[in-house]
Length: 356
Image 1 (cartoon, rainbow, N blue to C red):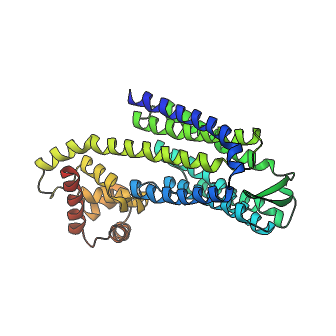
Image 2: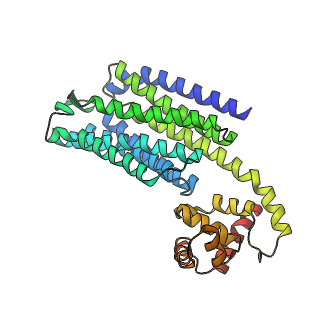
Image 3: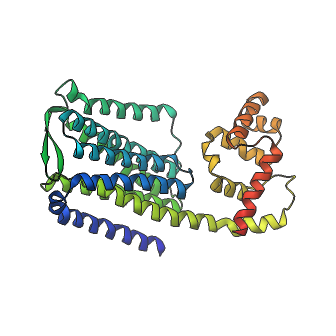
């Protein structure tokens, strides 16, 4: 029931947003674009802070998406206040920096939500393609491949960068299209592999954000406007994402809190370590855990079960010395010095959760 209601709200939100962008386009152009872009940039930075505060550094990809939007808004602001063409071009390049890596971070977020294990080399390849595209977008400084020419138009509402597209400009649209297709494919894969309802809802929300912003981008191309409405669209999308994320996170937290409380009452001494439910809650609530590598998280789970170093080494088919090095790294990142201190901190987290 809640899933359908939230989906309806999400769809209505994007319909209203798209319609609003069309209605307001002319009015904003008559206003002061530089001031509006400045406000958008400030709001984007505020949303980055809000994201870190709400998410508590649990999802790196979500934070990078918010940072990318802030970078994009900053680039638009620089263009709008420029009085020379080279500075406007720098602002345009900054905006591209935000836009080019945004779809990469979005795909990584979807894969994280679904739980797909991705090889590191693939991430680096995707990142490298983004860097190559960024180099191409800055090529007007030394070639006519991306833009044949560009100049600025200074109006009463702000500066606009006028561009004539070059022969390789279409690659930017291809780049975005590929990421869009990959995102849709991941969503289909998520439903086919019978993911949990919470995962499906999260994916649907992310998909709505993606489709909504693609729709706004299309509207920008159709209507005659010099204002970058993607700034408004991105910020509204982020606000919706934060709102929905805070709701789903709170539900996920309260879902297994009663079970944690019951097991804490039964298991007051931890000589046998923590059980799976408690470890799940600790990983969910303790933000520094997200700084650990995948292997370190795997080792931490076994440490919290109070397995000895030799047992952990045997289970993971590695040497005790390897486990020793990983354990030292875990203690350093979690700012603890021993198992006793680690266990004490974890028990404190569990007690605070059940009492709160």
